[in-house]
Amino acid sequence: MAAVLVPASGRAAPMGYMRGYGAKAYPVTSLSWGLLVLSLVVVAVVTVLLVWALLRRRAPAAPTVVMAPGGGLSWITVGVGVSFLALVASAAWTVAVLARIGEPPAGADLTVEVTGHQWWWQVRYLDADPSLTFTTANEIHIPTGRPVRFRLIGADVIHSFWVPPLGGKTDLVPGQTNETWLQADRPGTYRGQCAEYCGLQHAHMALAVVAEPPDAFAAWRRHQAEGAGPPDGDLAARGQAAFVLRCGACHAVRGTAAGGILGPDLSHFMTRQTIAAGTLPNTPGHLSAWIADPQRIKPGNLMPRLALPGPTLAAIRAFLETLD
Picture 1: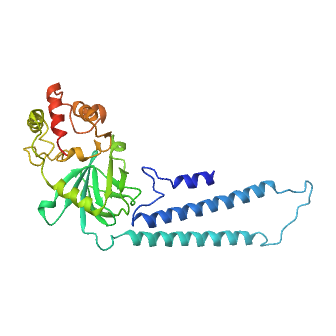
Picture 2: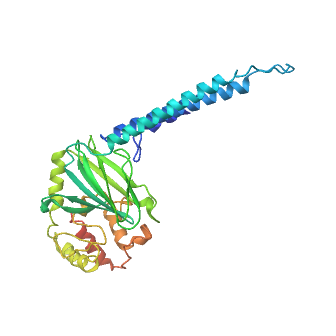
Picture 3: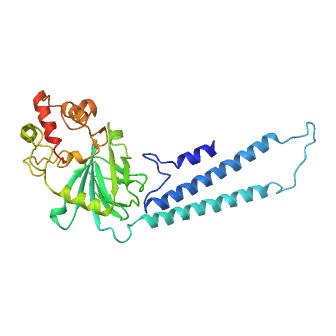
């Protein structure tokens, strides 16, 4: 069984943590494999000793023999000594890994502020240049090969920021700011998840970390910092007016009169892969369903069911589809 499970645990999986893809994940992954191998060795040794004890033959009528004092203590001494050394080595290795990943290496000049809400992620890119500071949601883009510093804040209850292929968990606690860092050494999309139970829709509080080459990231960042373009067509224009009236108290779209702060910023909504923090793929059909009745899809979230007339819903969807 172990021969099957150990290789399988290293295969790529959306939330797999036994295979690292960045500088912070590599030492943690090595430690995980080391502790797993140590555990398997302990299980194997104990199993062999148990089987040996069960199968050992005894003479059915052998007289009782009193062993000389100390005859069995050598096994106990060896077992305790080996166990002690293994535990000390494991503890020392763990402390060394924690010290190595505690602070980002030099060159972490990009800072991203992540705020956990029930049940979505607000993502704010900070920069000394105000023109490069912007807010998005549920999807984080980072450049490959560079460490990125994260400031983590809890807006309501305790959440936990976890992107297994890139690093370990860090809690987002209301009233304090925690920090962590991540680095991806190869392009790709890495799934993250809230790892602290935070209410009814905890399981539907996912995020995506998109790692891309530095040039592609720089282009994405410049585009995200811009406001939304003008509506394309009469239907989208009517949708923008309806969005500002019906949705603008909670959502923001830079470049329009919608400036709400209670819900996700939707300025470049169509560049995101999912809707509602990973709950649905970002497709026209799912978008219509979400606008029509968000409580059916994600019960308990703060977005109310507005009972929009069909033409109004279609217009708002047409407007949102222009936000790329």
